[in-house]
Image (tube, rainbow, N blue to C red; front, side, top):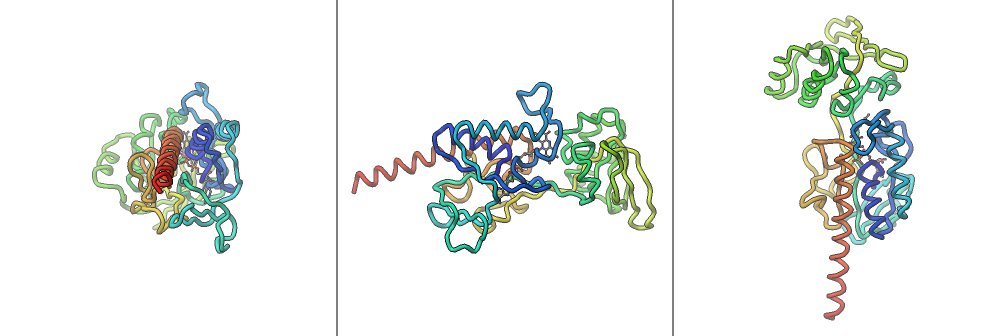
Length: 319
Ligand SMILES: Cc1cc2nc3c(=O)[nH]c(=O)nc-3n(C[C@H](O)[C@H](O)[C@H](O)COP(=O)(O)OP(=O)(O)OC[C@H]3O[C@@H](n4cnc5c(N)ncnc54)[C@H](O)[C@@H]3O)c2cc1C
């Protein structure tokens, strides 16, 4: 389930292992929650190994998809609307979740439904995403060398992003809607001590400025109502991430933030259900780590099916 780097890598491996995978790839939308996943929202990807000149996100995902198709993976362009992991074979519904019978039954499921960055929700943000607006400093910081960069947010991830971005930007401004940060004391201290970081307190971004590339932001002071503009080369939105796991509530164990918990590789709390990629990783959140964990889930699923077949054969022979 899912056709980002994790789901499609799992599809390549399971197809080449002759397991005839069906990829339930998601539905077209303007969000990260679409076939191809989060990389469909970005432009240049420069850190995926094998592409020394970089590659556009959507083209990279088209290549993943084609590679899995070459080995026989099937695709369904739809979202799963319900799952039942309490009975075997597992049930997956597509379309009406109230339908009495599942649309598909599967002996094993790899969950790779990814995650999404929480966004400000401004039309200008959607227009400039991948053109100066980013949600990932590790991915895009390098593009903003020598520029004035801003980070929106006040938590640990926002501080991490801001500190990392000082390696590239000539100045990094943290824009936060309150007077104080939510980040841990240690992260606050690190950010306050960094001479390249300054803060705009009590401020919200009301518009991102620029035509084709970010040139600045319009800010509103939430206590005085005053408006101002800030010239920028790039804006990083760091107000949080959410895994796409609503579907699995009550069926798979998750951590306090809703990420699926895995053990012994990609195993979940239900035998035969495996999880890979950002849906179970709140730490690394990279295409290459998602692809790597998709490979792990495929190998785990293949070995689990093999062991289950072997056990069933032995039970038959003994009876
Ligand atoms: C703007 C942006 C730029 C980025 N740039 C880079 C970069 O340069 N380098 C890098 O390494 N990483 C980058 N990342 C991070 C990278 O995109 C993610 O780490 C990676 O895509 C995670 O892969 P995934 O397969 O786990 O999930 P995702 O890519 O999130 O894919 C999830 C998939 O699940 C599907 N899905 C969701 N719900 C359902 C459902 N109910 N039924 C069926 N399918 C469902 C979606 O349609 C999608 O196909 C970027 C992220 C963003 C947002």
